[in-house]
Length: 393
Image 1 (tube, rainbow, N blue to C red):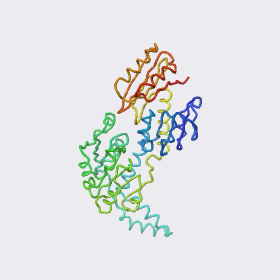
Image 2: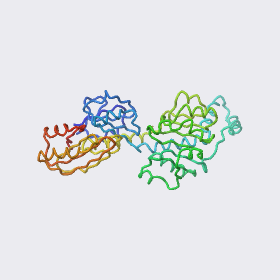
Image 3: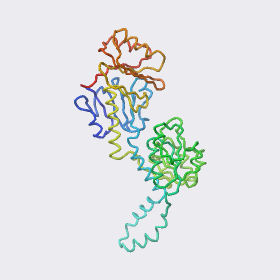
Image 4: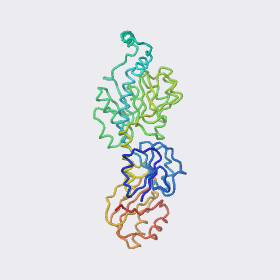
């Protein structure tokens, strides 16, 4: 029986992926095999020795202590793309809010509640509507920074709206490149993109290379009327620099899902309460993906969408399966196979992958290993953990 600890409200559709015949799922449970969470700030102290996997029902994992998890052989999963459509639709709303003073117009109408005569109201609105005149998106230029699951969808939306779309992503994957519409103009550097764009939409993870990417120096290249949209992460933008640009009319608007006390005071900042993935569908998609990934790992040792271990899939076969995590150093695999051979056990199938400083191996063997064999493998210098996987009946 596997134990799953949930540290946030996880959509029921996701929890239903864990069959109750083999799983116990609860928000309070001792010695869990895996943790599923959303925004809970996980501490090392909360990760008990039995934890083998942690799944974030969302894309960002900055609320999980990654390096300690890696050092202990704990696989950390996220759910990239599961909330992509929800974020894309909010970006579309941001485009419309930035081009037309919809919010200002609605606030103005709401302020007229003292008027009770409909004719008087209509006359006043006809007179004042020019205050809220905006521009159309057709023919404007949209710059998309980050062309992954969400960025490629945003680029596609821009093209459908009749906008010119430019993209920048120095780390674009082959899969992302195939998803990208051919009409998107690829830009070689960020200053060139922002200098031409009327709207700039950010879709980047928080890395050392992206933290504070939009800063005072880069803002000098923006059009003074440009609208910057950030539905990625607050950390990719230097908030103080953006506030200064807004105050000095060096930036048209900042439309973001990440408010701050400084931005709240800026009339040209359009702020939303972190609702990018707050749809029923997105929460269900993230929960289902997280649960399926955890289940596949616990039952078969396979890894997909991990942020700290390599992707690896080995089709289940007859026999018994070992899942081994180790430091990515030479001769590790040879040492492991030598021990198995010394116990006169045949290897049926095997797959080994590495990622940065760690490696992960699945080995299907013909006979059940005893504790002595497992302890010998654990005793190899550099082995992090060894798991005999009990496959479901």
